[in-house]
Length: 126
Length: 305
Image 1 (spheres, each protein chain N blue to C red):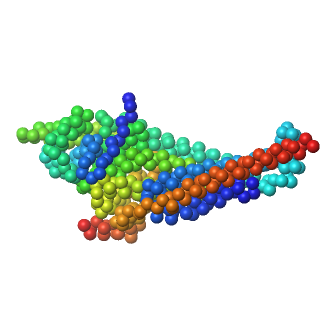
Image 2 (cartoon, chains in turn cyan, orange):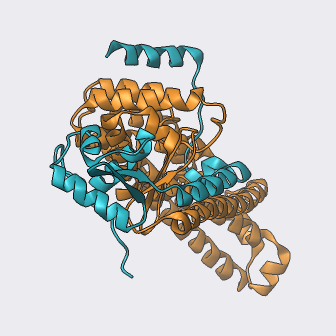
């Protein structure tokens, strides 16, 4: 099977289909409750057309990544958790057993109290 | 031989000293690639230097002189490398090879295991794998294909625009194969400990590179700065914040500050510095090797007298 490439992201506004799919999935996980397609659309940054959101939700459903429930006249969607829980458990084990920086090829640094307050100030400014 | 064999070692020290400046002034992509590639070349050159220094010791040994029909007296007259230096070089070489093996094994093993987890738990294609975990965590797992791994906790902390920044940041790591540049720097540091601080500089430059890409994708540097700040505070605030971070852990305040300033302009002259240094080191090594070869010829000629 040929390797699937991560799609090139284009400049602001237009997103590749794969990127939009990730955003929709991320939105569903962030919501913590089942969402209708309309709610998903409102929760996505720079929302695309309603039908695009619907197509993506159906695609995610086909892949087994989201569950669909009837709610009145429409459906609500929420992510499936089985594989996510398995992944969480395995990753936790991996990161605690071996050197996390080696796994992630990153350095671990700490945040001093002054740095922390500087960051909080930045967020308050908004 | 006297100067040229030591030149790569000297240039390595110079590179290590100059790298913070390069990271500060160059655009992050140039800095990351230039430093990683430059460090790797310098490490290769300095390893060859050590090998050449080690070789000269062999020339002294009587049994080699017998079997190789060399004249060790003739060698001694011309060879400016003291035996002690050769011994040190051998020790350094052995340490370097052991460190290299340890580094490469550790790095690749960890990534391979992460990749295996992603493949097992991942469904249906697509770049994102979510962990059902409240601890805020996000990182990229390189491979074919690569994965963006993010915990539910991280996704919940950020709003929709900030999630876009996070995904764009990790995607940038995958698209530009940042792990390869980091591995180059790690290999260089293993072979030549003078370059050890370069690893951190390259890691920082790679994060900055991904930060700038994410800011360009969403078209808002302030948003990128806020997203980074929020993710970092969430990670540090959570109880088990020991592991699993890429997006927010490394030198966050410097990165946030850089996003609030204008992008560093390209500086083609300065960007050439690592290339120049590498070229110089390579030339020095070739020169030293040639001199050693001539010395060996001379010793051989001396023995037949």
